[in-house]
Amino acid sequence: MRKITIFLFWGAFLLNCCLSMGAEKQFRNSIDWGTGLNMGPVGMYEYPGESVFAKGIDFSMRYTRFIDDNWGVFLEGDISYNSASRKSYFGKLDRLDGGRYTYSLFKLGNSTQGRFVSGAYVGCVYRHDINRWSFRPRVGFGMAGYQYQRNRYYRNETGGDSSSPQAVLILPSYEEGIGAFYTIPAGKIGLQTNYFVTERFFLALDLDFTIFMSHHVYRQKVYNTEKKENNAAEIILTLGLAEDYRRTDLVSSTRINTSTPPMGAVRFTIGWDF
Image (cartoon, rainbow, N blue to C red; front, side, top):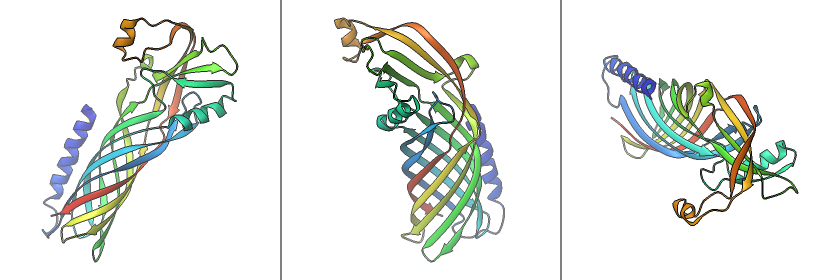
């Protein structure tokens, strides 16, 4: 998070320098807010190189300073979260495992593959206006705070004893010095199509593509389990979501080094030129 703060400072400094460049004209500044759908592959970390499609929500805010009638620089911050659906995740996992297991999520802390990303970016933008329309392609670079989505699920051999499934935990590899949330460099490409409702106010469709320039390290741990009896206090404390199994011996612990897939977004945006 400290790296993102430093990056925002220098991005703001760059924009401030641009304020004095070129002759002053109307509408050299633009600010917009947008929200929409983000989507893209997330890694199947049990099988490095494999991925499953995920989707979620996205929010962004952007300030643009135009140096002349066409070229400008922008400073942007965005937040997004996505995760794979249970059906698509376990369907893909079943194919990769060759149909050996049936799967179920933990009652507590359950999740499928996904990610939470917040970032700050600075870059250049080109403006081309046609009547009420304004087309603004952009390219930038920045820092993204990337948080892993932990996986926790049970797997039971097809036709096996359902009273003792294996528990599979996939989590950031703390042993490798990587926490659950850390900062990585990222590139961004986008296209904003604006329609001006008034002279200054516009509605827009914003297409955005983020490329992460780093890899991730995971640790997959597989445990045997045994059936347990939950007492009343445990059921109350967990709001009735107490696990039916307790982990016993550790079967395997595997280090997984995998790339970070890109992410796209489609946003509906409102903005103001001034």
